Length: 334
Image 1: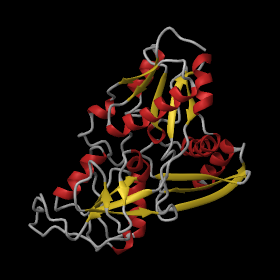
Image 2: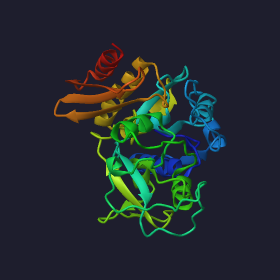
Image 3: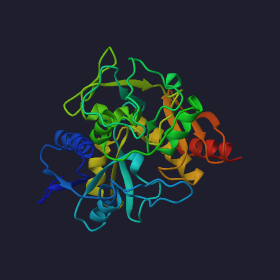
């Protein structure tokens, strides 16, 4: 395989997107040392609307906020591969594009981030002039006091948080990972937030043995508690990187074969089939998490679409990923 031009990998410009794209770039260069690869940074609609409120109950959100411009670049041959956080990629792709590969999944769990008791720097006063709260390490969601504010823009996280602790307040929060952490440190009206562990790992953040959160862009005074999936089920595709390509590009298909992790692909295929059958997008109050166990694929799913929490669980042979997702969706919609 040879090419007179560099193979272009499209990505958003956020710190996390670039970290993921650089991982894919390194894999490409290792697998195809004779080929030339380059990153192409593209600003998406979602990037432009970071400060806008994107979640309104009862209203439909635009699909593909963080993917559309990358897809246009693929279709117009201005890029050859597009790297996405798979949780941001709609289940229905534009005609002519496919999910070419899925990288090995990172830790799919969520993390509760909150202030330590000794975190006092740079705080604003809360609207009611109440003192800013801090907490001891290893804080559990159920142990947050009544009225505690856990900010998140995810309807899935909000619904599950309120099942665990009905006394919480769960307003929206905007911005990238670093921005949300800075808001938590500075604003007295916020007590905690929830972030994806995979993104934190890819940004080289660390949770120490005593529960402190560390890293180059981490403000001082933050603690972290990892939330097990039995407590907080992740969103579809969380922790996985998806690589979108043109459907009929055999040269790029050969590259994708080297980038694809089979087990992760089967897991997210089941999850995305579930989401598609539920008729929802990334802001729907549903969650699903599949795992490979021997030759079986097992998946748990939850839904708040029709009111109270509903749960489902099933397993099927590894090659029946789509059927597994559709089965769980049918059970939760029944």
